[in-house]
Length: 59
Length: 186
Image 1 (cartoon, chains in turn orange, blue):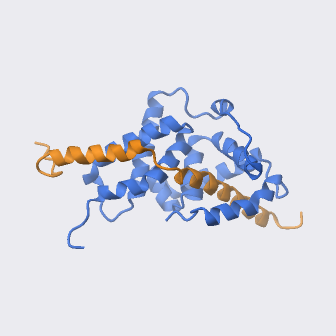
Image 2 (image 1 turned 180 degrees about the horizontal axis):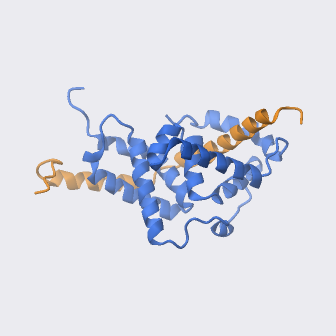
Image 3 (image 1 turned 180 degrees about the vertical axis):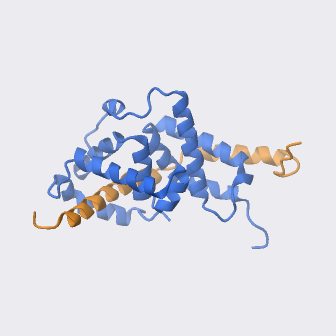
């Protein structure tokens, strides 16, 4: 009432985005489960066993 | 830089963001982590398709998203939950004082269609440009904008945001958390 609708919309939009960031950053800041570090270690070890370092020849 | 580093070394750094994106899509922690795992394996074994120097996070998000939508097509039950049926089964725990509204917010967010949730997360939370988000989702920039706008409009409606809502009381607290809590993603 005391302000134009556009300003109100912008404020609501900013409010929503702030809350989105909150939800998202809460998850981002969680400690990464060990399974992912383990997975990367396994993938790396598998590569090390292969000769020819990443050059996959389709033939 | 004498030789370019293996881009795969960079993958670990993006996993927290990838998990957050996965969780916002699946709304289920176990499914989200399984999908992150699939994404890591796919990305690792297809690393030659990654263009060094481009945005690895966006590339990983794209893979995860494709994984999600193809599994959604396979099991086309569950998914796309426009009426929020799944949401009703979420347990709502009362949180600390200022956090109650965030819980409401999250519940409301989870009722949005997949396409609107991902647009809002990519643009509103993860700090991607509309162009990046459009690339990740494989759609036009205008489509991302309209999905994000529809999502915001729906949240405004669900949460009855009218500029005087109690949610705004926590606005300062929100800003403090965002400012102090690693809100800067990139």
